[in-house]
Image 1 (cartoon, rainbow, N blue to C red):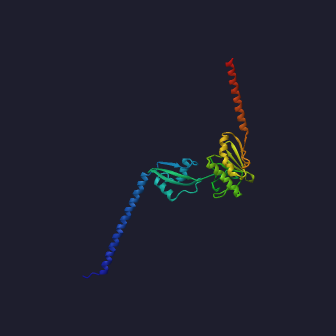
Image 2 (tube, one colour):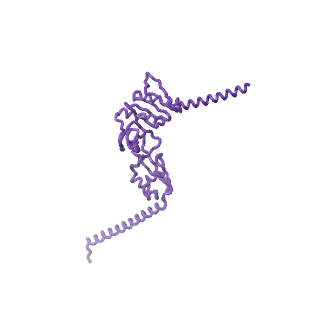
Image 3 (cartoon, rainbow, N blue to C red):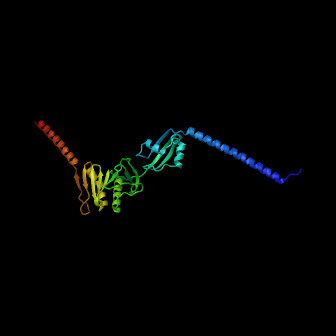
Length: 288
């Protein structure tokens, strides 16, 4: 009996293909089984038991968790939470630049938050919303939320603001002066509560119980250099420190005490006089 070589070759080729398909199916089924097993193990082992938050003083821990882990599965499984955050990081969260999830153990994660750098804020015309800005004068967030510890910028007005806007000071030199003053006090770790921009670019800074009148931007750098020394001298007194007329030829600085300070000193003097009078009477009795 004669055999057709072509048919024999085709038969062997079909057998080979069938064998390849068989092993491919087996391999895919095995991979699928392993994947299902891995998912089950992850679901069982990586149940979320503890979440901590680092890097934010604006949001409470629970508020930060609610904003970052914003679905039920993220609150239940650490691996899912990690993968979702890595592949689809949360964006447009007020005052937060980025949030990263770090494993502490299979069931414990830490949310590491990088806050948006902010220098200060100015109040919008509605009296409720605040436009927060950075060291470059760019608006980073607009919100009614009050962020503690940030100084205000007063003496300017704006109906509205959006992210990316520049603080509404038309004169570029005045704007740069204002930002340099904020930076100076931040660098010296001196807390201020307000910076008021007046007419013709004059500036007054509120610091503790003091108002520091810097005047115009003329000799501004030299004026600012003297502020830390003067604050040490004044200590906890209240009033206005006048630097607006300072020049290299006129280095006199006037400290004008306010009513509260004068009343405080008057009360201290009264108490001191009473103590001296009492001591004097006791000494008189002893001598007699």
